[in-house]
Length: 439
Image 1: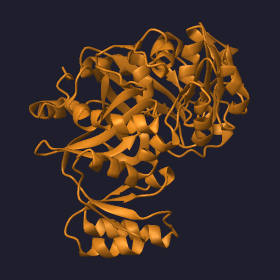
Image 2: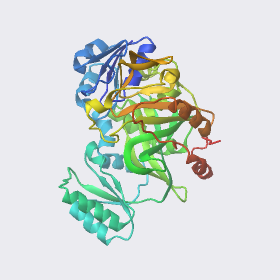
Image 3: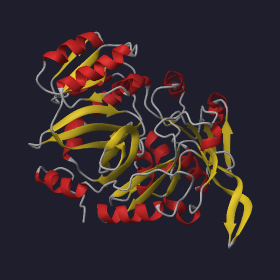
Image 4: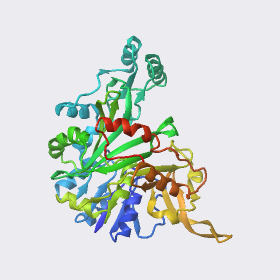
């Protein structure tokens, strides 16, 4: 099968390499000067995805993001192209936070109380009169959503907003202050959506770890690691995703669709936002939990067929990075071409992100020789996965592989999933994540 990956999120390399291993003819488009994917056998990198659309029409076209090029791809979709991605309309449920919240309310989902404000100054004035902490969320574009801020007190919120004003921040749309929920746990639930609706009995629950350092300390990143598990039934999916099916059908959505939520100290589930694209790093962990051909089930889903077979054990993904991550402005001489050692022995558990193949120094017995080797091609190098009958066993498998992989100034968290030992028993009392066990 011909597979074209339009990789706007820089998360398609692993998928492409696994497609090649499964015998598919693959082309990768990634809009970056980074040499991601260079040197890998069988991978053709294209500078313009449009020139490969006719080539891939009868095969599979996959997009990893939900912002760029969707309007163009929607026109191709209308012409019969098989495209595994959100549409402009379904992506808007994530990109436009207000649209997503209105969709939640339309199916009867309770939201934490919030108020909207036209300016930062108005939001600050409200925060100064409040007696509780709030969460600041912009209501505009996907880029603005990165400005979400969770305060510890009204004073903390006022100080943060004032700093944004002093720095010259201007809103593209109104902002909101939402009541901060005293949460026991945050988590997400996702499903695969095709022309017949969500694939049955294949919900995935996920516990994300976004801060840079152990103990959830430090700046937020895309994520440093996630604990996932496919489950046959899930009460949150049944309450918050299944009712969305008619809306997603009307919007033409295809692919992954998820909701992020939190559980408060009384067991009530509060939704936060939708994700209308492949998750990060959930997609790598999903791939590790899939059986059989990595791409054929996607093509089948577009035709209304369910051929996906999954592993229902807990799975963990750990991100391995290098400085200046979580920033993305590293100089090429610092983040490109660093040799990666120890990966060959655990290659099945490795999911290349910003990697290339090049020639560099490697050990041949006790000698250093120059030969082809894996090398870095950016700040976020690879995601390593592990599965096990329980979370603790999945951790052991994952970190066993992580410890074998070395490269210059490698960075990763060592506690992904560790906190679930205390959290899961509480969630089980409320019939949440009951199919996931720590020990």
